[in-house]
Amino acid sequence: MNLLNIELNLFLTVILIYCLSFLFYIVYLVFPRALLKGKVATYILLFGAFLHTILIILRTIETKHAPFQTLYESLSWFSYSAVFAYLFIEWRRKVRLPGCIVSAIAIAACCYAYFALSPEPKPLPPALQSGWFVWHVVLAFSSYAIFVVAFAVEIIWLLLGKRGKKYDLEKKQKKYFHRMSYNLILFAFPLLTFGIISGAAWAQEAWGGYWVWDPKETWSLITWFVYTLYLHAVAIPRWGRMKASALNILGFVCMIFTFLGVNWLTRLLNIPSLHAY
Image (cartoon, rainbow, N blue to C red; front, side, top):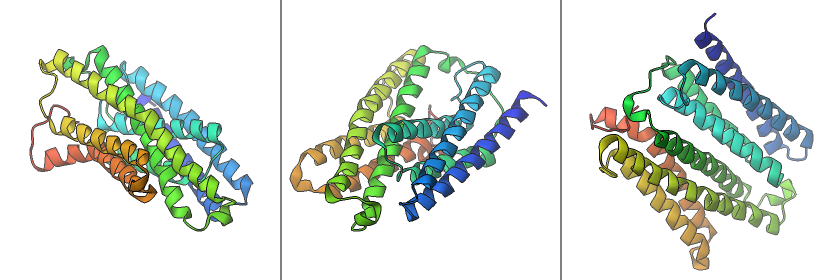
C-alpha cells in the first residue's frame, strides 16, 4: 500500500470520527444537562484532530512542501485549522455548544475534499516556491479558522434566544457568547489583514505587482471590509446586537465565498485568475 492510499484511508477515518463527534455534540445541544455527552464529543473530536495531524504530516512528507497547494489540501488544512482553533477555545472558555456547528463545517470541508477532488499531489510551481506563500496561507487560514469559531458562537447565541434557561444560561451568560464572538473576530482580524499584506508582497515577488484586482483579491478585500464594519458596529451601541450578528454571518459567507466561491465563479464564467486552484 503506497503512502497516498494510507492517507486516503486515514482521511476517511478522520471524517467518520468527526461525524461521530458531531452526533454527540448534537445530543449535548438537545439535552444540555447531559454533560457527559458533551465531554465525550470533545474527546472524540480531539482524537479526530490527532489523526488529522498525522494526516497533515504524511501529506507534507509525500509532497515535500507545505500541504496547502491544491484545493484538496487546502480544504483539509482549513478543516484541521478550524477544529484546532475550536478545541483551544473550548478548553480556554469552557463552552461546548458551538462544537456541533464547527464539527459540521469541518465535515463538509473534508467530505468535499475526499469525495469530489483529486488527492494526487502536484509539484510546487515556481510562483509558490516562496517564503511569502507559506506566511500568506498560514495567516489567512488562521484567520479563517477563528472566523469559523466566531460564526459558530454567534449562531449558538442566536439559536438560544429565549431558551437560555434550558442551558442554565442567564442573561449575563448569553451576553458572554456575543462578547466571545466579538473577541474572536477582534483577534482574527489582524491575521486576515497581515494575510492580505503578505499576499500582496508575494504577488509583487511572483508576478511583479502588489495588487491586480484578481477576483480572489477583490473578495478578500470585501471580506476585510465586512469584518471592519462588524467591529465598528459592535462599538456603536445604537446598532444593536442583531445587526452586528448579521454582519458576523455576512462576513463568514464572504469568507467562504472568497475561499471556495471565487474558484467556482471563475471556472463558470471563464474568468482568468492567478489564484485559481
